[in-house]
Length: 421
Image (cartoon, rainbow, N blue to C red; front, side, top):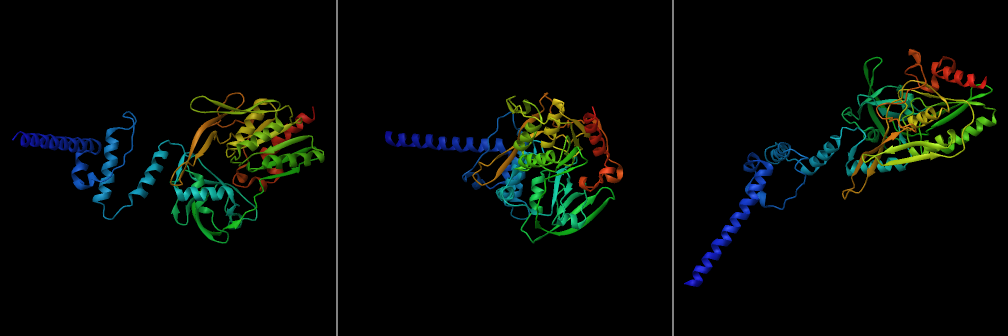
């Protein structure tokens, strides 16, 4: 009798523990997802293996967590067709990165990351343009390379690329993701739609992708004493090319120099530091600062360029271009001529430590000039502000006749003044 009672008591305690456990589990689930979500999901599904995301209580509001779970539940149970929730969640991660409100911070899916790495290491096959995001986050054509599909199709500077293969790309704020869609196998075709602000028209084009020979630097003597170097972008070996072009001009009798950085979207940080090192005296070239105020500084040695110098910039000179221009300005090594620069002074890093092969490009710090000015959103103001004549605003820099190029004329005059002293 006593044994029977003991067994009954133990059984009752076990049943109570089981009820308490499942009640606690279900109560915690209801707290996380809301009663409405709970009652619409079959009970059996709550006892499947679950995964969870963890946030500090003050990071995410309960209402947003409830809303997320409710949308997910509706898509799982009431949406008119089956949804791949794993793919949808990948887009949710993109949304999380977009929440930083930084166009340079973006999550790459495994497929996008694979393509990004291929494009970074392989030769360039595409249509032959350099691009940047404008103030409205539309992909703006900054430059068109000679003998390229883009040049032959009549694409112009300041055209906006709004569609690629009929896909609207105006909602994509990362230029690399749009460029990735434009590039492809040599000999294949890509359809793009451009918007031309000047005429307010949309133009559909079909171009054949080609291997592009990219001339990022060129030089010439403007007269017997003044040389000219145009740098279109700071690629991985531009510092060596700059030294070659500089020495070539010196051998031709150059006594003063104009460096043209107009429409240059930037490029390799290490390369622009090397070029600045060749120009300015010993000292700080640029430094970066992260959220914890930790600084990473770059310095030049004693070697410097001892001749009159002008640098031309415009509203599309960005990033590495601004580092060089600001450094020269801070040291008083040359005169800046043109228009206020773009104002992109952020440093990105890429995290590739994802199990699924994805990647995350994010802003890690900001650039500062030797004098401590932040470039980002501020730009670099020229010493002499002057605009191009209206008829030349949408022309490529190299297509503007030198005697009609108002910015170049002033830059040369400034060098000439110093030579004549």
